[in-house]
Amino acid sequence: MDQKLLLDIRILKFQDYIRRKPERPFGYYGLGVQYLLSGTPRLADKMFMQALKKNPSYAPAKLGKLEVLLAENKFIAAAQYYRKNSDLFMRKKIYAKRIQKTVSGIYSLQSFSAYCRNFRSLFVFDEKIGALQKISGADKQNPVADILLSMYFLKKGRNDEKALTLFNICVGLAGINDRLRWDLIQALSKKEPSVARDIRLAGLFTAIPENAFGTDYANLLISCFMAQKDIDKVNHALSEFAKRNMTPSKKVMWEYINFCNSNNLWNSTLASFCKYLIESGWINGLLARTAIQLKSKGIIDEKDRMFKILSLYGYT
Image (cartoon, rainbow, N blue to C red):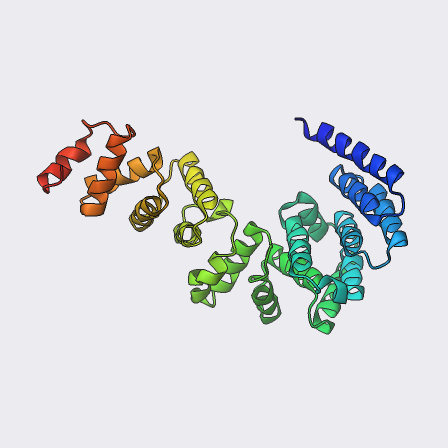
């Protein structure tokens, strides 16, 4: 179904909910979210305000107001709003993750790049960045200011001590944009190579970032996804490799064969990896059993060259 049509339907549903239950903040909040998704942040803000009139401590509406400020590029106001409501926002991990995801999502937008470039004067530029730096420095924890500054420093290619300190703070935050996390890792690894081998950080990715393909890190990420036993992540990562006519390392192929056997997965990707490894001279019982199983399921033709190779090693 068309995305705009879906939004229109949801807007009508929440408007109906408000008519039926006007005293509940949820309806106003839900309608505000739909307005925000439809690109009308001012209408969204009005709905979030209505929700807060019904319940001044309604956390979802406060999150919505923060997201409106970010959508309108009012970054300093957003950092200040987080400061004002930090106790509420830090109450649940899901709130923190949502905020960090929303702020970091700006990184890939052209509007943020334009924000970094287009200031009326150097004075205004310094004033805005300086305000964020003051908030970041004064607050024990303000992910809005920290992430915004990190994104700005990355765009400007800064790698001084202040920038690296912020990069270290942000790189391990839950929910941040995969591309941002990868760029932070690249920046940090220039002085701390071990960062690019940190399994904990790799495990935070939801997918392989576009600009990580062709690097060893892409292989590390697939290994992490398999260690997490996340079949969807693994399948998506391998399909992205295939789209680019690329293959993971032999080590990852071998791990994938173990992964598929452990999870009873049988597919053409597994078949191609088996074929590649066997024809490369990687021969053992697991590979042979996997190939035979794939043949029995009709995924590999029994006349495939790999079976001639296996027969030379006594596997039939």
